[in-house]
Amino acid sequence: MAQLDTRQKLEILADAAKYDASCASSGTAKRDSAGKAKGIGSTEGMGICHAYAPDGRCISLLKILLTNSCIFDCHYCINRKSSNVRRARFTAKEVVDLTLAFYRRNYIEGLFLSSGIIRSSDYTMEQLVEVARSLREDHQFRGYIHLKTIPDADPRLIEAAGRHADRLSINVELPTDPGLARLAPEKSASGIRAAMGGMKAAIEDGHDAKKRYRSAPAFAPAGQSTQMIVGADAANDSDIVRTAATLYDRYALRRVYYSAFSPIPDASAVLPLSRPPLMREHRLYQSDWLMRFYGYKPAEVAAATDDAGMLPLDIDPKLAWALKYRDAFPLDVNRAPREALLRVPGLGVKAVDAILVSRKWRRLSLADVGRLTVSIAKIRPFIVASDWRPTALIDRLDLKPRIKREQLELFAA
Image (cartoon, helix red, strand yellow):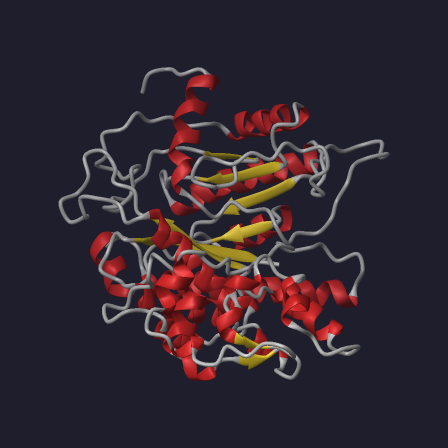
């Protein structure tokens, strides 16, 4: 391997990391070094420059790989063993120095570090842990750290990672076990799930210890997350929604991230030739929010899909569900319970909560609801107010095209 300087390594390893979408920094404990004799950074975000890539992904973290060399040969991965890409590798010290330098320049709020697997899973995990340890212990770094862990690494290394990192994650890679077996035959679905189960137990133990002993060290306070690739195998949106719901239930994940498959150079013949539309990834994120914040069951989200099990791309899944189940509407905004109002397309959580507070004092008219939402025209077919009833509007055959002219915002207001 030719000798590369740090800038050249950064160019290669930051580009290699762009395929990983699970870099959000939400949910961790607050830390701040302001006014302290030692330490650098905070997790509060003040003074940090947040930037977003053209496709909407957050790039406010230093998001890099330790190395893009790998002993595995997963078909969908640009860093697979047989891929003809330029290779590079950082030392742990180089990553530490880069993180501190970027932070001092206010470019980032923390570090997202992943890696190809070199030598062995344990050796790779040791290098990742060493980066986090050095930042925390040698430099008193108080910023955000997200480590992508290796599923079959020694549990003692995972435990060490959790002591230093805010969030840990393990990629399930693909939505179904057959898809993983076909595209990543060297990885084990059961091994990945076992590692996620072990991490869940360690996080819960850490929370219990913190309740009993104030001085107990925190373990991954921002929890664990995962990511799955969309569009590389034959799994449809219904399969993906059910897999995500199972992961949330079994492993108490903070987030499931979706990454639309991107064709890579010298791609394997078993992969599709083109990438799925990015809107598909967006619709899956919307369905994820429906389950997490709007009370939808996985089967209800799946019911919004078409005969092929795919969510519509032209309207959001909440509207798709409402149009299929029109008998659930219209809803009286002065009487309907919160869980029912959350199903009205165009009414977000804030708007519903404001309606519940306002109707304690007066019966709400259409204009009253309009002041709490982005546009009353968008939700008129689905509600009843003191001076409004949609009569036959909800039953119109042309309701969908009429609404599409003003595409509803799922989380408006």
